[in-house]
Image 1 (cartoon, helix red, strand yellow):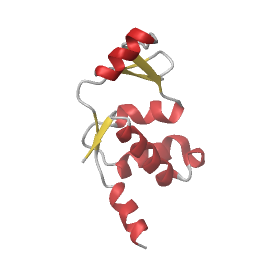
Image 2 (tube, helix red, strand yellow):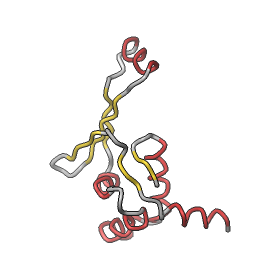
Image 3 (tube, one colour):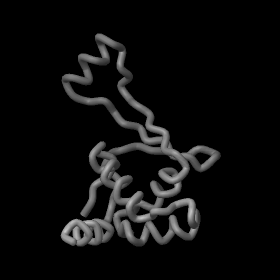
Length: 114
């Protein structure tokens, strides 16, 4: 019961893009995030194993639809309504998937949740 309450509260959170994160949308409406690899460990990896200074993360169909909806105003619940309208049954189980997706975006430092 407690876990369900936590998940209900989670969908009320409002995601926003991490400040300074660059992204673009191509002609097929697919989103690419540009993550700068900073820090000492990344710098060493860039020199030793030629890790790129910038990593490009290509979002899939759902992510590319969701990413532009993240505006710091809409809650995950509201974004879910757009996803439901656009994808229908293909998006189900909707809020379980969205919760996992937004937790992943936050863990990688792509968004903030308030």
